[in-house]
Image 1 (cartoon, one colour):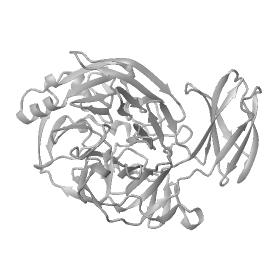
Image 2 (tube, one colour):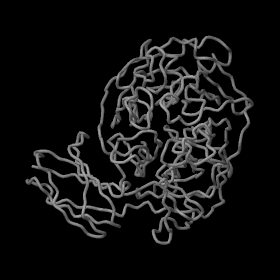
Image 3 (cartoon, rainbow, N blue to C red):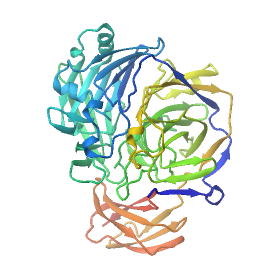
Image 4 (cartoon, rainbow, N blue to C red):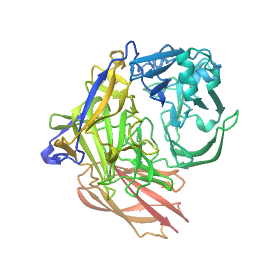
Length: 532
């Protein structure tokens, strides 16, 4: 049974018509590169205006049946080089590479990051002939981007452009890889070995990392190595995969990242809605704000307006638990494909706001696509575009490449995955300045709060006062500072408005714990409690 809910906007005040805080019109223009194939969930790098594309898949969304999910025949086994200015591409097979490298180079949902002229690829999931099974690869590969591009164009050997190392900490798929300063951040994801099974029958094993894994890479010699490895664990807030990792400029000018949404919550198979900021000093769950209109990995772009100290993030289509049908706000727990283009903005005071843009994707596209930045624009070292330094009133910020296209919103839940395919159309994304348009502003505020007392406490019970914007279900987790879950359960007998309860901390002493309440499977509230 499809789980679909609609809400009256006047009653819940989800959406209001807003003055623009982003004075640009979006324009998507299809670009024809003859015979360029459809592809999704791939990795990419660029050098001197040419794109390098490795891995991913050439079919649509994966099937529900274990025997038919992620077939090896649909692995992308071709390396592509695209010259978007000339509308042409070159290609070569990965089959000439050593087995360990060629198997990872056809994986899906690889964690990747381009660091100057090197593309680092970590993990990823695919069928491995050498393992006789679908696995998450425990490898990191460094790719010489200009060398490989030249080899593909000239039709020469590609083998010398790869270096690879093995490390079990790299067995991650569906996470994201970033870099702050000299340190790499492998954020979220999971290890998934075996064949996918929607009924959780024993055809696979799965373990979320629940971590941010930090390290530095030594790529100076013939062998790759890492140093200063550190793992930060949080089984509640970092239990995420298949999300968007957004490079950010924070209000104080610091560079970092934001985790946007992702799946799945521990207590329910639904997306997270609140973001998590990542800085060199640590991570900060932003549970006072929910982002509704984009929940899975999709094409996205980040732009900073220095004159107003506003950080803008654009999300192009994809998959979302929420969307608008006209002016009606729809919650579909099957999490459908959508054509929504949305934006989140972080203001100078650190507050966040989400907007539905007036433009939409041409169809149900954007999921598992990539946004390839126009690197001729002024930008920060983490590829955030510097809006204030762009003089023309019209300019191309980049291109949307690949992704999954669907003819219906819910092909997976309706067992119609064969109606989806890999998108072959490339879209140029242009901003047109000085054409402010009224847009819809979404209410992302958290209507729930709680206070724990006494804090610190010397007892095995504390009092929790919490306010409920409306009466709904509540799950809770108690976790340690090292991110492990100590206890979990449900709260019952509550009412709209003010509530008070006695909360049991039996068996906990001489440590600081974090109590997290989850309201309505979407609003998180966490409180640190010192137990003496």
